Image (cartoon, rainbow, N blue to C red; front, top):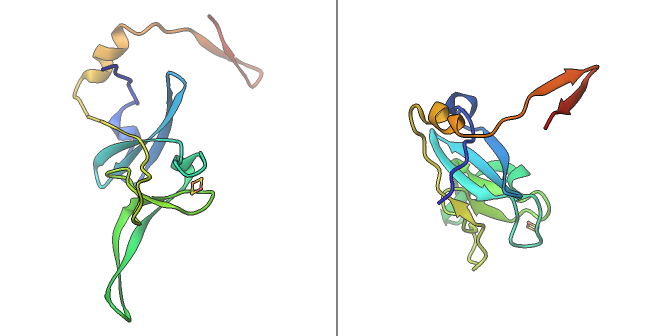
Length: 135
Ligand code: FES
């Protein structure tokens, strides 16, 4: 299984997200209450950039007139048509077979330096407000 360094955990605090491009595939990495989850940035409904959607919670009801707000920060709402997905599992919150692809995410101490060591890098300079990639 290939590995991709998203970045220092300190740069991805709780309730934040980062979308990365891994081999041409956009993946959203979410910090939900200190745990990390990753979803493909592609809604299974009509291919919207799902990970740009609002992160919210879930309203549940056991009986008429009783509504409870739960799972704050665990639900991702698609920006195009509002389908909602469980960030933890990639499944829709409503009964459906649709599901967004999920990926494993882990936090490793000292992994950043170790993984960066073998990565080919290119010098980048900024000239007159233009970012230049030298390769
Ligand atoms: S494209 Fe996501 S709900 Fe339609």
